[in-house]
Image (cartoon, rainbow, N blue to C red; front, side, top):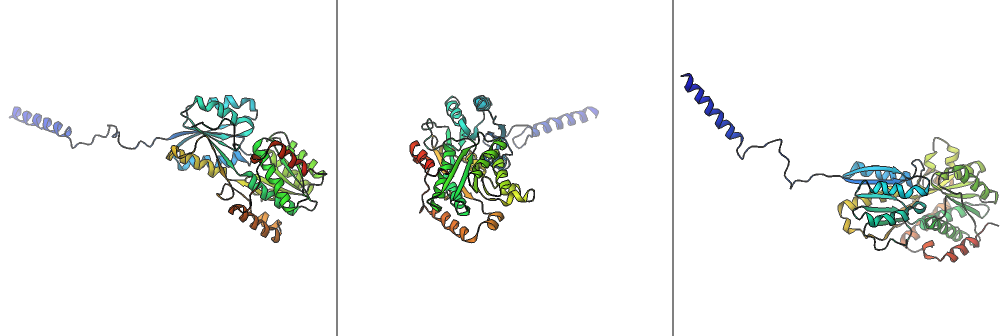
Length: 371
């Protein structure tokens, strides 16, 4: 009897094991089918300027943070050194990490390093913000895309506003360093001022870099001593020095890249109140959309070219915040609205540095020199 019971138990175990191995089982330790999506993330490196500049670095970082939240992205932020001689090593270090994408700014020579490195890393897609139209060496590269916000358009608007707000007929612009993109800012600003007043005088100065606020402040004060009573600050982090000079001298300031007045509201209202507007460039949205487009369909992008985002397609605008509404008279705001609409509809074409010879550009600057 005991032997019969043992035999029955043994047979039961055999049938039980056989059942566990049949085709109806669902093993939990086996890997999923190769046909199922793997939800792999793409690796993106953002090489940006010093954060806290309230300029292109901060604006682009907003887009970077958004892509980390909303897109299948594994991201890394690398701060670009202030010394241009270190740009090459910084870029090559990033390339050696084998990312899928790198985006950065043209930034006073960085574009040259990207164009030099890109052919050696064909598997990496590069985007360069603030790339000049007609950038030498870009055409034919199938892994580099330049992006340009139409700073000539938004600066035309700020130049017009500056001259309308001026009591002296003299306005200024302080850039960090002048290179083609900054020359396009200057071109737009001068032509906007001339559109408002054919006898406009415009002081044009470079403070030396995009970091030194003290140097920018002294540069702006020199323009103010010449009689300029509206100053356009186009110097990233150094712009805070330009705007401080405006506050101390009791003249108007205009910011750039982000809403600079918003940085001071409730913190330094006297400073905020003198910043009548800012030339806003939506780098956050542009960088986010680039990464999204590359993920979805990289072949749809026109590599080796420069994409331009202007007033018409939302790439840039002037800030119309509570300070603007308070400080700018209604009749000037009405003129600005008409001007913006004319630019948006293409009825008014804003001259660009990229359509001029160097001699024509120098003649333009000399024609409005402050006397």
